[in-house]
Image (cartoon, rainbow, N blue to C red):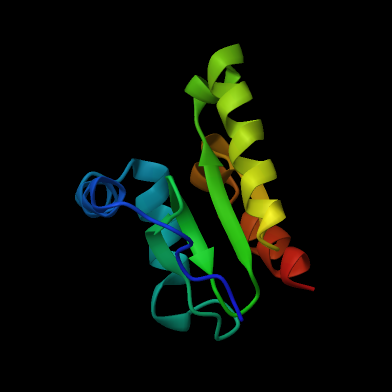
Length: 120
């Protein structure tokens, strides 16, 4: 069985809905490239609740999460949280691809190629 949400609480679902309404510029750019199966026919969900996390972009078909990392992810506490999140997702058979927000905004074709390579 493919993991869709894990055990997700109502507050996480609500937070994910709110995040969909407050996208960062890099999230908007990447979503425009991924939505409606625009990338190789893959179905991505944005701000998808999974367990105690909200995943930036999740492809259930290929069990891949694409996380956009802005400057805040350089903070040691945030990086520690990111590592915990990645381990949690990997325990559920989900691969995590982290991309820099700057890369999405300036080198989108390269980011899309990286996503396709991660899909295999």
